[in-house]
Amino acid sequence: MSPDTASEDAFRFDGRTVPFRPGQTVGGALAASGVVSWRTTRGGGEPRGLFCGIGVCYDCLLSVDGLRSQRACVTRARPGQDVRSDDPDAPLPAPTARSAPRPAPEGTDS
Ligand code: FES
Image 1 (tube, rainbow, N blue to C red):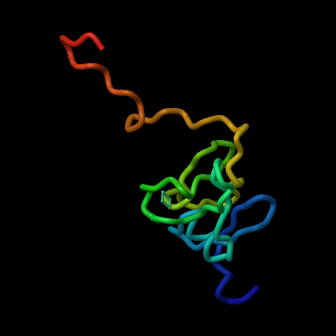
Image 2 (image 1 turned 90 degrees about the horizontal axis):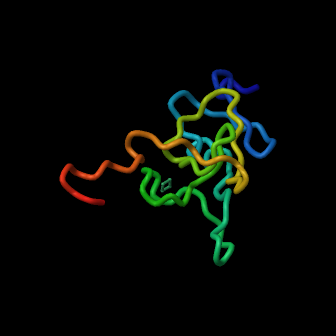
């Protein structure tokens, strides 16, 4: 092990070990390891990976610890994570306060 990698942790990505540095995202660690695409578009099968890098475009979706459709660019890498190319059979993540539908304003019939 080189001195440069001595303090790195690692997660698993589709069966391979990917090292990361503290504070690095899953997408950043994958890119640093030479992995630049991990899913394809539904229509044309075009490769996708990091694009915007700030959580806006959703091009970087993958599964993390069994939860599919996680954005690699904003998901912090953690030791021992099981990261996989997006798996259509994995459960969708539970809604969060930010993603849950908002109740209709009082006095409306929606
Ligand atoms: S790269 Fe755009 S949301 Fe992750």
